[in-house]
Every structure is written in C-alpha cells, then in structure tokens.
Length: 504
Image 1 (spheres, helix red, strand yellow):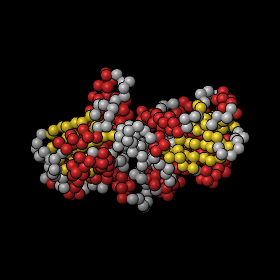
Image 2: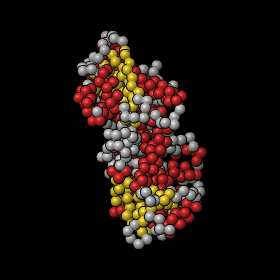
Image 3: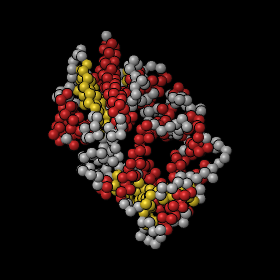
Image 4: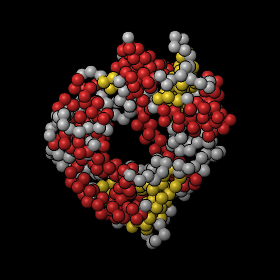
C-alpha cells in the first residue's frame, strides 16, 4: 500500500489523476522539475521552520527516517520529552511528520503546531489549505491512538519590523485553529479515505483530472497527457477565463477548445472578446488615437525604469518586515529629448547589506523634477518606492516626487489600445516585446526573468559564493535588468513610429 503524506493528500485535492500519475508513472512528471525560484521558495520555507524552532528551545528533533522515525518518536514520547520536532506517525495508510508536537495540558494529550511560511493567517484558499493540513494530521494522530489537545498554525507576523537581532517571539504568531479544524475533520476524513482508495488503484483511472475546467495557470503538471484534445493554445488561455467558470464549463461541455471555434453569440468581456477577435482575424486591433493620447501625456526627459528586488521571509536587515522587498538593483535608460542620445544608468548592490539609502541617493541624482518615469506595471515600482521612503526618510520627499512622475507603458496594452493575436491575452513585457520588437530577446540571457534574478542576487551576496561566481552573477544581473528598461524604450519607440506612420 502506498503511504499517503499530507502533501500528497493536498495535491490529490487539487487534481486526483495528476497525483496518481506522479505516484505510479513518475516518468510522466520527471521533466517537470521545480524551477530555481520554486526551489528557492522551498528553501525559504525550510529557513522559516528552522528559525521558528527557536520558540521551543527544549524540543528534540527526530532525525531517523523510515520505520525508525516512528520508533524514535514513540521513545521520545514515552520518555516525557516536552516537545518534539518532526514527530512521525503511520496509521491506516497515511504518514505524517508533525512540525512541532508539544505535550498538552491534559493527561496524555499533545498539542500540534504547523509552521507556515506565510506572513499572515489569511482568509480564502490558502487558509483552507492550512486548516486541511492540520485536520489531516489530527485524523492520523487519532488513528495512531494519540489524543490531541490544541491545534495551532504558526505564521510570520506581517507587522514585525526588525531592529537589531531577530525577536523570535515577535516575529511569529501562534494562531489557535482548533475549532476551525474540528469543523472540517469529518469532511477531511472522508476525503482521506477517498484519496487512499483512488491513489492505491493498480490500473490507471480514466477520470480524476478536471483541470480542463480551470484557467491555464491552474492546470496540473500532466494536463497535456490527460487532455490530449486540448491544444497548446486554447480557450484556457483567454484572459481571466479562470474567473469565468460558467463560460469555461460551456466550452468544455460543447467540446470547444480553440478560439476559432468559439461561436459569435457567446458573451465575453471586452478584453476576452478582443483577444478572440484578433485571433480570428489574424491581425492586431490597434486604436492609434488612444495610443497617441496616452503617449502624448509623457513629458521629456523620459526615464525608462525598472527595479529588481528580493523579498526574504525572514527579514535580513533592520527596518524590514517579512517578505518586504529589498531593492538590490535598478536600470534607468534616459531620453532627454525626442532626437537625443539614449543614456543608461544602472545600480547593483553587491554586498549583503541594506541597499536602501544608496539606491535612493542614485535615484535622487539621476531622476530630476519634471519628465516622466516610464515603467511596466506601475503598482510594483510605486510600492517599492513607498517602502524606500519609509526606511530612508531623508529621501522621502524625493521618492514621493518620483512616484508622482510614474507613467505605466503597460496601460497601452492593458487598456486594450493594442491587442495582437500573438500576445495570447497577455500584457507582460515578455509577451509584447517579441511581437513589436522581434530583434530583441531574453532567450539568450543567462537570467531571463525576475524570479531568477532575485534568487541569483541572494546567492551572489552569500559569503560562501566564490569571487568568480559573484562576478558572473553580477554581469548576468546587469545584462538582464538593462534589457528590461531598453525593451520598454524600444516598445515605446515602435508605438510612436506606428502612430506617426498612420498619420502620414
């Protein structure tokens, strides 16, 4: 019998068939290796757990594996150990490793603490997953003959601001979730039994993947295997279709998989309709007047600007809260007049220290009053700037002034002034650039997206990284961030060219 862990159970709840394939046909998912960023998130989760363990200084860690782990857990419990990390139990075909098992107030009772890397206890799917996780553990503990007391979720305190050494008690919050868990335990038990039956089937199930009823970004790893009828670009890629469940269910019920097959009578939102119309016509939808009006609000000098940030779960420096962004890099291309030369300014912090003051000083020097600061998705840059202003009050007025100069080039595409079939519903710069400026590409770069840039910077400033590797990472970071702002300039230039050409 396959032992089902809590992570396998949570995966089963998302897609039963995908989870069965992972267990019984691992060759199908072998190519779906975690990305560097996903591995980094796992590392951050491990770091959060390691730091949180300081809340129980008298706890003992179960170091054994396999059957010996359950035996070691039993010995520690019998010996009166006050708290145990990674206490392991196997019962009824399920296996758990409790983050923290603490002797409770009642006789022979044990409290369970589940450590999460989130910075708050949220309402919604994430919180439900946490409650399901605890309910799974409570059911396995009951089957193993262990009486549970209180059940807690331990998460980061989003209000915590580091000042000096980490204050572990202030950094974490222990939320008593016992009542919430008890409300769903019976439902989770039924789901566990269903998972045990399904995942232990010898023959491959013909059902169990309903990911075709979800938008593309929620598809399972083996979606193409389970749904060969769905092409690589399909109705699942229509913008925000995952939030339009009725429409997506209609498409699946009627076996409508391609955008070409969507009947004209189907009601779609404006962005959805434009995406479908552009695809069916095989040509872009361009509102030159609206583009000209948008770009006409830009004032010289134009500052094409982009940040790269790193947001560690555990605050690394004074003045930071959990997951607050460290602005370790930015690129700035400056065009002072229509026919002027393009200038470039870059900033990369190469030490493991807070770059806030230095970054703010460089910004203050090069972005002067007047002119437009052109970004792609302004809420991000605006938010990072606001955080810089709070940590560096001596630059707060300048940073606030720069925020007032921000203009969002993405608005041209997000506001549907330019819809191209090859965008495939996306308004990301990496979708727009190869269409409008095909000679530019990220494909040959050592770093090709922001998540990798973030992870590489943290590796670059680590003490164990060699000087040679640090230099290589720094060069790759500079090349990547520089292309981000040059790409904005090139897209802006192409939009201006198209608008002017149309007027001639």
